[in-house]
Image (tube, rainbow, N blue to C red; front, side, top):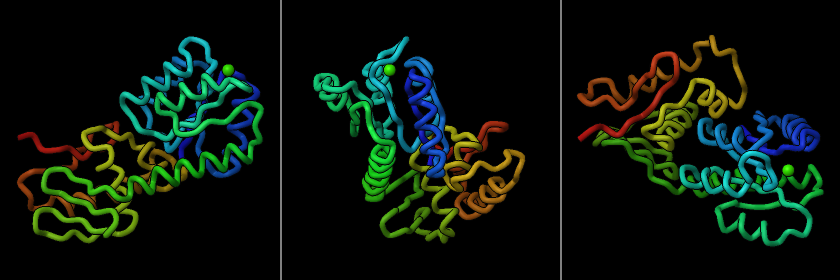
Amino acid sequence: MKLLIIEDEVKVNSFLKQGFEEELFTVDQAFDGEQGLFLALTETYDAIILDLMLPRRSGLEVLKEIRREKDTPILILTAKGDTDDKVKGLNEGADDYLTKPFALAECIARIRSLVRRSQTDKSVALLKAGDLEMDTLQHSVRRGNRAIDLTAKEFKLVEYLLRNKNNVLTRSSIIEHIWEVTFDSETNVLDVYMTRIRKKIDEGEDIKLIHTVRGVGYSIKEPEQ
Ligand code: CA
């Protein structure tokens, strides 16, 4: 699980980072709105903690910008008694809020619940790219009329690629999402998996759906008409 913390108070940010790392989250930190927005848009996170009072870009601006492109679960941190900000935040697409000061345990519980909810929401989706179809409820994959048998990890990997269809996912982002650990980027585990998936999905097909971006990562793309 990968979390982004956007909070300019170094103490609070570090305290949260440490707390979530103890819960085995991978944590990125940003200390102003600009940096936070950049990370939120360029990386893929399971959840984001966003303070509203930030230098360079306000939390609300950051929230709006993220929501234009992504539905990553966002928990906002608001100042005590500032109902106005809280409401604005929720209207702009925040998923939950916490009022400062808050207890770490509460923050962790809220984030876990947001991530769980977003995963459940997502589980109803039928994912497609070209004639490749994944039913995440039935746990089945087809390409045209051909049923494709994937192992649990392969399934998770294809699902992650399909949910981010047409976007290139970096090697490190794929590894962190699928294995929830950071392995050495030199390891070839991911390549081995990609080779197997490619064989199952693209071998013998005229149109290839899985693409390698050398030195960067992988994507599943909707074929051009
Ligand atoms: Ca602040």
